[in-house]
Length: 260
Image (tube, rainbow, N blue to C red):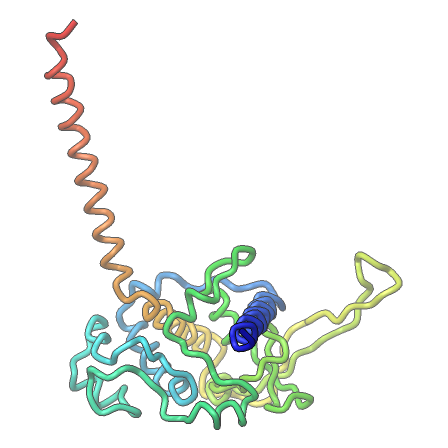
């Protein structure tokens, strides 16, 4: 009985922690719109896959995705092995990370989450699709020496994750000013007023935004690789039902025309 109670309490605590994490992720700034056209761009998806294995798969796993599924992105087994596989031996292996979970928790304070369905799980009823959140989050890092990692994020304040792609974007500082709270004139609030570029990256702002769009497109695709096929099948089913409805309607009229 004691074990059962302890398990229930542990489950409640886990649920509360996840809820607080989701609330934190949903907080911060308004989300930017993810460029949805990249979902139809095979080159963008391939570049997103490359960014994922080079910058995300070092700490985060995608344990429910197999490398060979990237054949759907127009890649051959040779291309997958030569350019995208660093922690596995066979293209049929799942995209697991080689870092030990206990070490990850010691270094970051929490085990980095699996990213297989991160785009779907990050969605918010109030703010929009998870792809919008990820697109905003990846572009909202800034230097903050008060944090253990030296980084902070506007979309997820006090996030434990450092800026993995700072070499691409460069280092930025966030500018804040104190303004009167519009709801209470006796208080002041900290308002974000833009970024200051401290050091340049290997990409300019437009190139970095495009690259993050590619990465988010891949994360969105990875959450449901058959999404495009499902859409096409859905359109075909609707067209069939429309044609079938016309035939059924005319057959019904013909059947009942002599009945009074």
